[in-house]
Amino acid sequence: MNFKKITLPFLVSGIILTGCQSSGSIPKVDNQDVVASLTDYNILADDIFNNIKNTTNGKNAYYAVVIKAIVDKYFPITDDMKNDAKITRESIESSYESSYGESAEDYLNQALAYYGYESMDEYEESLISQYQYIAFLQSYIDSNFDAVLADYISVTNPRTASVISVTVENADSLTDDEKAIIDAIDAKIAAGDDFATIAAEYSSDSTASASGSLGVVDSNSDLDTTYGDGATDEVLGLKAGATSSWLANSTVVSIFKCDSTDSETIRTEVQDLGIDSPLLTYDSYMEYLAFNTYEITYKDDDTKSIIQELVADALETRAQERGDN
Image (cartoon, rainbow, N blue to C red; front, side, top):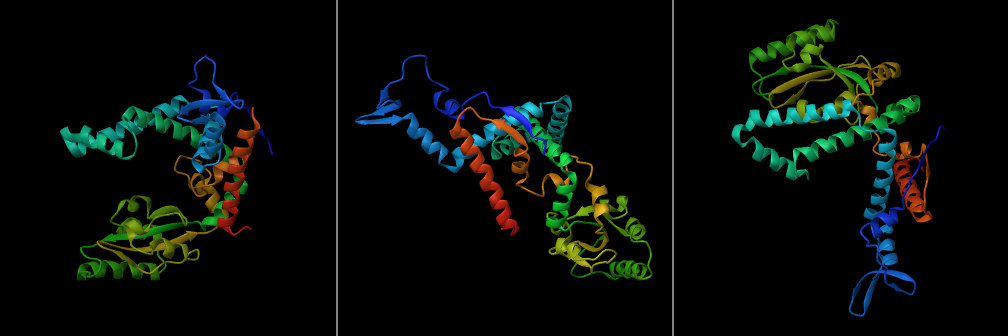
């Protein structure tokens, strides 16, 4: 494995405990730094440090600092990241203006506050940071593509699939005309007509322009919201070339086909590691695998121990969840 080297030019404990200290002398008790005092009681720097490093939030804070150091060093902000963030911001602002008119700013500020942002500037900066993090994951996937792909296939049961989706007045009570459309589709499928051609002709939603193609569907996909309860499971249960029964969801009835479960077909579909690639999101522990490809030189043993234990624990949890232990 090719390790990328990075030296952390700081003590994380120093950042937390001494970042705001003055240049004056620090009082000590039993040779330990006193950061605050109450009547008959001293708050010691070592006690604060021990409390921080022994809590989940404290450990995560350490880890976040190290991840940021890696991302900033190897995946610096690019003009493309800035431009993409700007486009996203402008799209959101335009959408709110279109929906809420003169009240757009108020509604947008409410949405920002709900998600913990004080302004669109802050949100735009967070998008850029997310793009840096995505680049970090993309680099790991690109360097380990065959292994990641094999794991993705094993874990998520992916396949390419298509749909014919027909809009109706009431999916629970079809009109005679609607039944005639469903019957015509069934007859064409039974006759062996091309599913994609049928979808292009009969589908009522945006999938018609793609001849019904849904691309890759896996266990993380959400077809249920659009097509009804059990839609995702229905598709995942199909063998290559098979079609489903009709599924109903309020004003939509749909039938699915599993186009392929072939690994090479899946490879072709997911090999472009764009921002919406399923390889980026299927494994919530991937960042820890990526983290371990960097050779990090720590300036103190406490920080090294905290980070290494956190990463090891995360990967142990991953193994347990997958039944690898």
